[in-house]
Length: 333
Ligand code: UT7
Image 1 (cartoon, rainbow, N blue to C red):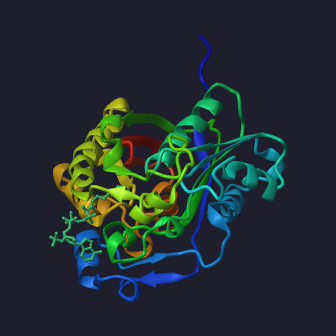
Image 2: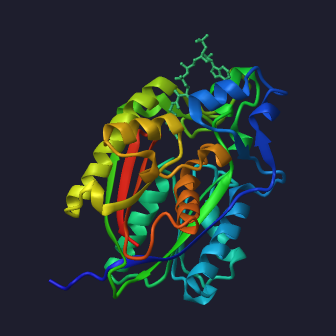
């Protein structure tokens, strides 16, 4: 059997809209308070797009930043994978817009719709393309514009206050040194589909969305917060442990956990269950809220820029979200 080619992250970057929405800004549209949002989630502000560019506009800028960081030229990229549940249009997905805007060759480009863990899913797919020798330079992006999907009123306050817009990207290349994506671990439990979902517009209905559905708010995300919370604090530690076990690592070997930024309380509960301090669990949710598929690459870039881990360190990416799905990746930086 031939030896598989390892892949590694050669560069990362992110981009968020300039428009800052603070918790107190939200009180002009709904009955809420800075105190409630901060206590329940740790979020102080989020970025909401101020133009009609859609998720592709953020994805393109994040990709440019990651390409610059990796010193990669457009003609070198031979695969594009975009993780998003908020594509500009119903189809064909933002990866086609990314290919065109970045002036890439006519390479493979597709979207992955796997909600919060989607960046880890996309990274896993990109890793396989490099391992098998199919691709040499894979652009992986997580990008979301959630603000235009939310019910920005008191009716929608339980989800509207949590989500933000943003994008992050990574360049994967073959590695001939210790840096590598060591393993990825992906899981799904579809019985919880309706605990965190957005029902329409949907192919199940004809027309895909009706006046009645719009009036009932079925075009907005619905979340059973407590059910999600309960499962998240169980699955995060499991999938982090799975990544450590697969690579014979202990928590002492791991420099930093980069979790999906869903709720500061979830990260704190995970740290407590895993008997580690919050200094090992990266958090920037106070600045951006939950940016779904974009949260991990944004957090990864900021953690790297803040010196939370160095070349040669072990880090673990971990996520939980709609599906329910959960995932992790063990990385030697
Ligand atoms: O990325 C996807 C993964 N998502 C997550 O992991 C999120 C997981 N869940 C959570 O983070 C938490 O469940 C939430 C932050 C969503 C909610 O926190 P909670 O402590 O579970 O609050 P709750 O839903 O039980 O609501 C408590 C109260 C309710 O009022 P009553 O019924 O007790 O009178 C809500 O109506 O808070 C009320 N409420 C609000 N009040 C002020 C709900 N949203 C708001 C709001 N402002 N924005």
